[in-house]
Structure formats: structure tokens, C-alpha cells
Length: 454
Image (tube, rainbow, N blue to C red; front, side, top):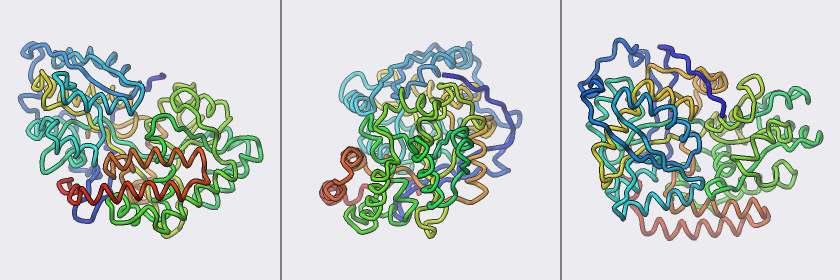
């Protein structure tokens, strides 16, 4: 993977996020940084924890579980820094499959081998673990982390029932990456309306280029196009759908599935490809023109030899219906500590060490997206152009499906959407199946949305 050097600046580049949920119990994403929050590193007041000399800290080794391959590189790069600043060494426990990873973490809670640190998700997925008592409360540690430079707004997506869990590893938008050479060779401009997107897709198809790459690797990939078509059609309805106040069989969802099917009928999508090994090379070769995914995927594109903004750019999927307005999907990735880890207190100290400036720079270099500290700004041109555009045009930002609805429904729904991707004519059967699952779930969990930070 090609690594990008991170240039420092005192100018903050932060998310302004609005998370989906009911009007009184919604999860809040990182809010926009203000100039008053933009404190330079030299002006930040240090807490005793933040300024503890390395020689005063006892050596700590913490096992770090994750399902994102790039974090293996992070451990290699960050360990010397963590060792120097806090006498911390991370031991990676990588997984290549998201489904088996989630199972391993959850099963670990029931044994004596609960992971010290582990990558997870915010929203309902975080709440489920917090409610089960399996997460270490880090509310008190957040005071020191914020004083040291971590953006205070990032506490919100990690808050359940007034307690803060874990640290923010990254914050991302979901965007369409496009091959600039393919667009230029075919006289194409970035589409700003749905009709323009269809014309771009038709032109690429006529030239022998598949408009969009798709994947069904791991069950979670099934929701990607569903959620984006849904929020670009009716974000308010999507807001209700994910918390059980609307049905998957309602006309609004049926219309979206018909639209998605029409895109398959027109040949806009590639055959299913492996996201980690096939899509980026095909994109680099100009075999596919676009790919809808989180901004964290940029590392795969640069790993395929492409340069940000020179060889590829990104844009938010245009609204299907103009009345939807400007909407973009976001996700926040936390790193959590197991309440029953053998070395819980040491693991908490290791997590805090990961939020310090040098270690955070390395995380940003690996994970991409937006900085989690006020004194760091990403030098990545594609991310900066995208973030500036979203801020300038005052986009409404919503949480992606994977976190915005309970795990039981997001995982089942995603697997059903994959079945649709393989057989587009099955869309009504798929919607009926998901709604049957949702009916049972919400009947048994009437108050599950309570406690998420609003």
C-alpha cells in the first residue's frame, strides 16, 4: 500500500454530521469544528496523563483485533511511536472476513479471551455491546484526550446512555470514486444530477467500460446501493425506515428497488468482484469507471498505483429526486476496550496512547478520511476537495445503514440485498423477507433506540 505523508496545519477539517434515528433519540455524528476549537498544539493544556514521561509508564502489550487489512501496517508504523510516548506495544489479531470477525469478538466476550482493543462500529452496533455490559467506560479518559487535542465533537457517536466508549479511529464519507482518465477520454464531466449520472453511465457502457464496480464479498456489502438510492430519493423516509417507523414494503422502498433493478437491466454494474483484490486493479485499468464506497477505499486505489486527484477523484451520488436535497452518508469507526479483558486498565491506556498526535497521524495515513484531532489536517487532495464541497453546499449528513439500524436487521437486510443483486427480479420477495424480519424484531425491541446520544 502506498503511504501518504500527512502535512500538518492549524486549520481544522472536521465533519458536520447528522445521524439518523427518531427525532428524540438520534445518534449524533461529529459536529463541525469552530475556530474557537481550532487550538494549536502548543496552546493545548496537557493533563498529567497526556504529559507522563515514557520512563514513568510501565510497559504494556495489548492485543488489537480488526478486520481492515491496512491496520496491520498501522501497527508496524505506530508501535515505535507508541513505545516511545507511552511504553505501549500493540499485537495485531487480523481477520479477513467481517462476518467471522464480528462473531469472534462477540464470542470472545463470553470467554476468558475477550479482546483488549478491537475495531468496531458506532450507532446501534455500539449500543448493543454497551447495553450488554461488554464495553469499558472511557468517559473519564475523554477529558484528558480532549485536553490533548482530540475533537470533542467525536465523543457524540461513541456515547450511549451518557457514557463514552472507546476512541475514534476514523471518520468517513461515502462517495463515488471515478477514473479521471476514463472520464476525460470520453468527454465526461462529474454528474451533478441523476439524469447526468445516467448519461455518463450510458456513454461508458457504449464505449465498453462498465460504469460501476460491485462486490458481494462479506454480507455487509449488500446495503451500499440500497442506502444511497434511498437517501438520495427520500432521506426523511430512510430515517424512519431504519428505526422501524416505516416498512420495507412501502411504495417509497419499492420504487427504489425498481430503480436499482433498472440499473442492472441497463448493464450499469459489473459482475460481483472482490473489493480488496479485484475492483481497484480493474478501476486502474479503466475497465470500470466508478465505484461507490467509503472514502477509506482510497488506500486501495493508491495501492493499485493511482494518484489522488491526478488519476481519480470523487463525488457524492446526485439526488434521484431534487426534493431530496444534498445528502451524503457517513460512518465513524471506533476502537473499543472490552470490559472483561484480562488487562482492561492497560488496554484503556493503550487506547488513549493511540489518540495522541503522532499515532493519530499514522492512523489517518492508513485509514484516510477526516482527522480526529484538531491539530491535524489531511493533506490528501481528494478528501479535502470532497469535504470542502460538502461543507460549502451544506449537505445533510446521515449515518449509513450498517450502523443506523440494529445489527440483526442490517446484517439480514444486507444478505437479502445481495440476493437481489444476484437476481434483480426478486426485489419484492427480498423486501417481504426483510419486512417480516423487521416486524418480529421491532415487536420484541420497542425501546432499543433509547440511550443513543442526541
